[in-house]
Image 1 (spheres, rainbow over the protein chains, first blue to last red):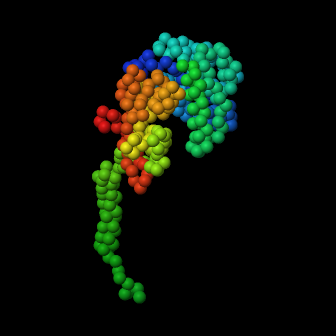
Image 2: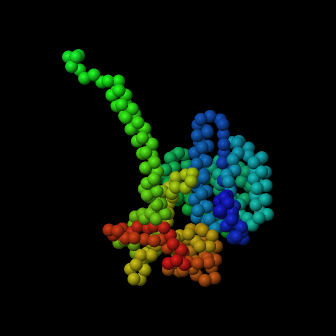
Image 3: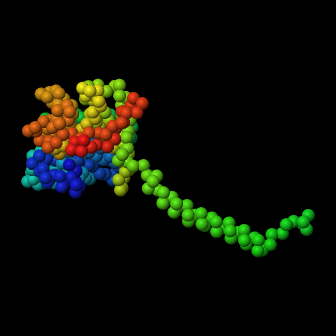
Length: 152
Length: 169
């Protein structure tokens, strides 16, 4: 399910079945060209990852709009905010919350997050159309979906 | 020389110029009108499009996953969408092409996706199951069987088109 009117309509007919929330965490920075380009590439590939995961498990995973934050060494303020998201989601039917990110700074905060962190090193190729990148992404998505299955 | 030169009178010059310019203007107005008028006839229908996916001789009785890409145009984007089908030959040698979209809530089912049911389609989301024919296994979540793809065979190649729900088959 995605955050649009049509999917929400379907969600409310089958709320009890859709128990998993997927929140992409996207870093934004204004530092310099290199960092900004890196952030843009991560945003693009990250969204491909989460959309593919949602496609596989459309009937059980709800993909939230991406959570954007300013790049920072210390993400504890963001953790507080995300835990509020998770708490609100728990008031609905969501039992599992997954955060997806390429930003390694989340790794330090993992145990403070009220949910499961899916962190992976970013693919830096930048050309998401190339056949090699596509097959790498497909392969990694398959591994991620297997991982999610083990939590159900 | 200069006496023999054909003089173009003012009247002739103006006539030629005005006819020429007028002709261009008329053509400029008519061409788009004609183009718009016949445009619907030139539009390729995107829903009824068939795409070659696999050689028929490669298809066995074991359901196999095939992927192909179509160009999808909606109001704002034009995008390439990957489509997937499970394809096999039934006992009569006829091609069966099933949509992988679970009829329960739209997850992707896989053939033999669960070790306990090696001869069924399995949906990982809520344990929905389908027999090889695509019929849903009773007492599992899906309310009906998997959709069929319409197919054509041309020169030994399988072409798949739009999906069709079971009720209309």
